[in-house]
Image (cartoon, rainbow, N blue to C red; front, side, top):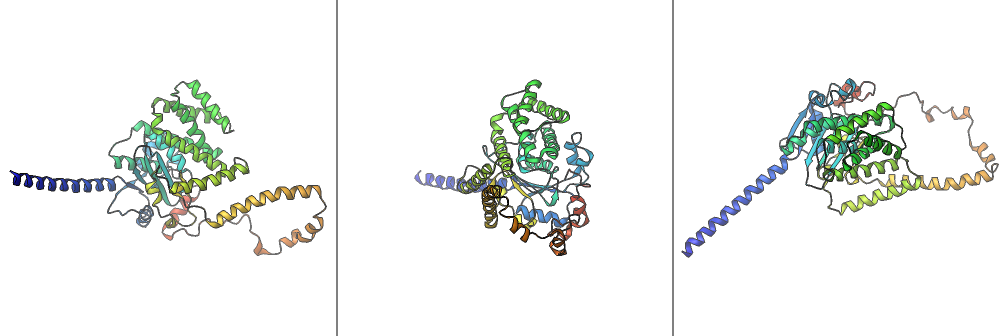
Length: 414
């Protein structure tokens, strides 16, 4: 009897170990397949490999999907102009679903028309609650088409389709925000739409008059005046959002993170006083440092991209400072130099006003005449001469990339 029990015990242990190994293998397979990459169908094979390298993904060990222009048009049709719809797809995305409470964290590279915060808030409208997302291109593009890739990747990674109404609504919000951004700036437009949406969802507002009041209050906070057409466009969008009955508690982390991100960006752009800018700069450094020791948020794939592969002129943007390198010592010194010059300038200006003739001799002696200033052709730049913005553009981009980078010719949906 005792021997039988021992044999049974050994078999039980063996079965348990086998199950543990099997479940671990399944778990690892699921973890790998839960990260999905989408590539723009119109990229060359070399550019597609470049983007996989940027994401740090081996195409033989990950799910890699293509997104074409027909898929973009499915959601952009009816809310975007033909120019915005475009005819090619360049933007790529890398999506990683995360645990509850992590919110939506976004990093972008080489996107010119949309920002990380803009994508984050529209993804909450699409019905996504927790995910890490990277949207990028091998050279500068508008980035509108990237939203379609993210939604497709998220559905593949989770195995659960997003509601079609919400996907269409997210695309409409992106275009509405982008159009407004053309007039008042991307950051401010993102803040306006995100704040209005937050109030509508948080308060369960569905009455058209209340929505109109909310729009007026928020735009007053940002000190902007909407045209009648812009007002109607935003009002129509918010009425549709109100009809979806979003659960504020499930997306508040993302909405609040976007609001904070916008405030920081606006302060950095000089929307506040110089003291606000200094305060926010120090706060940004402090947040970055504290984030290194904090485990509250998992940025996952946002911190694993190889930004150097896109060149030193690549435009990198993220909803969290941890996903972007800390400023270099040169940038830090340059910032403090500007602050010091601003402070000393206050006193110098006061001194000059009190003694208007004190610098007259020096100014006359040290300031060259107009003719003298123009004698050295190498010291001046003709303002009409075009200057290349990116000396690192790869040869394999060819004529295609230069056409797509021309603002007068580029279809926005890329």
